[in-house]
Amino acid sequence: MTGRPVAVRRSAGPAGLLLVAAAAAWVWMVTRWGGTQAMPGTMGVGLPGFLAVWTLMMAAMMLPATAPVAGLYARTITVHRAPRMVVFTVAYLLVWAAAGLPAYGLAAALGRVTSLPAMAGTVVAAAVFAVNGVYQLTPLKDRCLARCRSPIGMMLRYASYPAPSRDLRAGLHHGAFCLACCWSLMVVLAAFGVMNLWAMVVLAAVISIEKLAPAGHLVARAVGVASLALAVAVFWVPALSPTLTGGGMTGM
Image 1 (cartoon, rainbow, N blue to C red):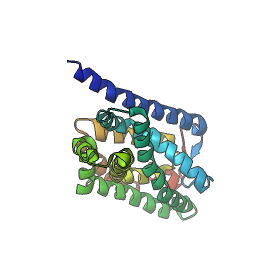
Image 2 (image 1 turned 120 degrees about the horizontal axis):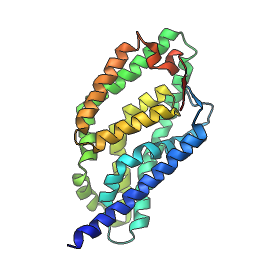
Image 3 (image 1 turned 120 degrees about the vertical axis):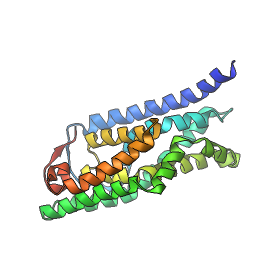
């Protein structure tokens, strides 16, 4: 009877710490960028600063949905749990930090759209919605989401890794699956303004529901259909993507 409580404690502690880290990242984002007008582009931030802010954003948005997997992985660790979970989490965030490089290029490119005619911005907005909508409905999205929702198979894979590099490789591997699962949602974020807190909140909720809710896979498909609908509707209602079509939007 004592085995289960011990296992629960092994998973609850690391999962709770990830939630605390995510909350701290959210507090920083709100206090630093709350009330700032959202706009496409990098908001005048250079690449090093952008990568730092991007990584904090990913910590805020992704760690809550990752906490259950981290807790499950922690249950496989019997010694030096705290430092090993730090390695796992840092490796996971390194994947998202690396994703900040193409995100910076995309944000910079979208920032230039505002200097084009309004119809060009609308076309770009439609393309962004369409990319997300199509990807949400692909088998690759389904496969990556299934791994995130049912990670037992990944735990068995991680157990086969050599001990010295296991935590690093496990964090990188899980981060890669999360990136493959959610990259198109981050493209939508870039279109609304990378530091748009309202968009961050909505997308973070979508990601968490997709990964954690019993019907999360259906939610992912519904988001895909809704995104395709937005790709059409934005031509009649440009305000659906104000930062690209010129409507303006406040950050929070």
